[in-house]
Length: 83
Image 1 (tube, helix red, strand yellow):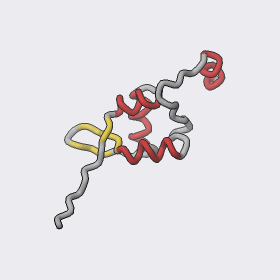
Image 2: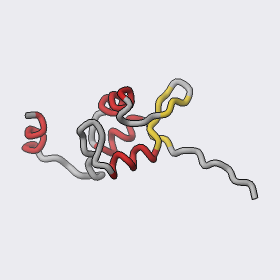
Image 3: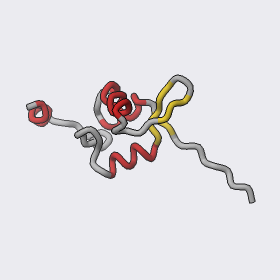
Image 4: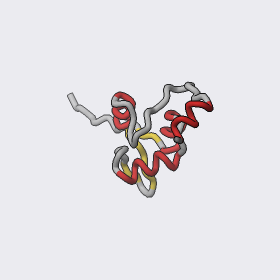
């Protein structure tokens, strides 16, 4: 029986940013610093699914905790995180 490798599922930085409630630039910065693993395909960089799952399981990367999909942050919490 032939076994074929399953290609990794890849996300664009914008997709991860939307999922985590941060800006795409934050994701790109994390990718550039190596805090969030990425793969280059042609001229574009992508985040593999396993890196997203691992970051979420470990409570985030770069000092940021990913929010649950659809979760909102109150203005008081946003101000608290700024100071």
